[in-house]
Image (cartoon, rainbow, N blue to C red):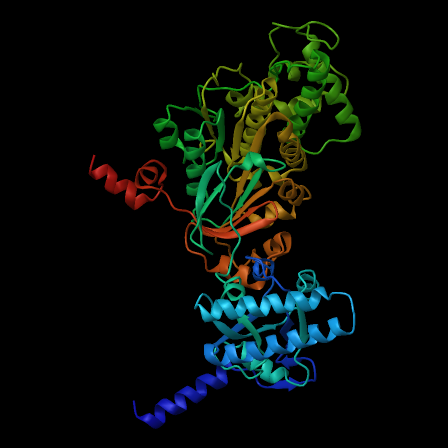
Length: 568
């Protein structure tokens, strides 16, 4: 390309990426539709501790910082320091002749100057002119810096020069310097970043800010709950399986998974776990009328009443919207169904055989006004869905890894299946105190109905009391967060993992997690297995990295699975 064409192309590019113009005001700039303000640091305390710049660097705001460090000739600096030392000595002698009391400020200044002279003379230190300029932010910046006795000023009538100084073009237009020797300058570097590495827990991935390991114990927070939000194919199930694998190796007492796509089978096979298929044709059944085990410190009557409330929520999910009269009738029918098996509050019903859903249908047909409700239950007792809920429980949960697969369950029955399994798990959790994790994949299914969403929220809220960590995983972020129980579940989860997001949901996610524009753009363009990891008030960009053998166990990549199958 000819030189004149190259020059024209360069000029055109500059016109495209540059703003149309800038309005210059005494203490700020308006560039396009954005405002910018540049500050410089003009005063430092006597000592700068290591990491003093950390709170500024880790602010969740977009801003620019430039640091200019210009070496000062040691010989010239020593001459100036000798002159300064002479001035200070003379001033002290003058005060002593006048009979004034000792001046600690002068004594400290003389000691500092002499100490710096010694360090420079012995080549232990070097002297630099240092300028620090910061664009944007104001109130947070001023408050944060003044708390450390570091004072800043806006570049009055030099905002354009200030902007040029902050841009990454190495052009210091302000030239406002503070002399510093090597030690205080070293406190600026390296730029520290948020660290989530501890001595306990499991490795979640690699911190993209500093390449440290993200090692964390979720049970060290106020609660051990976690939410994972990601679009399909971004690695959420892969990440979850990796966490399960490492938690099992770290000695967790039990891991329970609700698997909607049968993705956890190889994991169960590797750890000799129990995998139960919940479907219409399955040989494994859960009877929702089972009486929960009685936890220590609770009475059978209280447990029965609580169980009836949960059972009523399940039945409302099956029957649809009920009138107040029908709701009251259903509650009475459930109580009478248990009474037909001699299970009554305030009595000892230990060892009694629980009723089935068909018993409730029979009771409803014999109650005045209950025939219509009984007809609605017919498809679950004798109709097309009869094999699903109208059978005695026949599964054994004595294992460290328990997986409930609902892949073969019809779409209409999936919310019911998840509710029944979660209720069964909740009764299991309450029976005995142990360190356990529960993973609910595609949790948005539970958010479609108020009764199931209420149950899930209650489980998340009460999990800490029973040493349980609940992980809710979803790709349908919008449905989850628009539910009145979605945001409370997020706020009751101390761990949050955001992987690659779709443009349609990024705004609602940004509002829920208070994401900056840079973080939004990062999530929109994130690679598979890359995202933002929140732990309490701290968060870092993270890359999920498995070992070779972990990858062999947890991968669901069809190409990789076919290749493994060919290789036997």
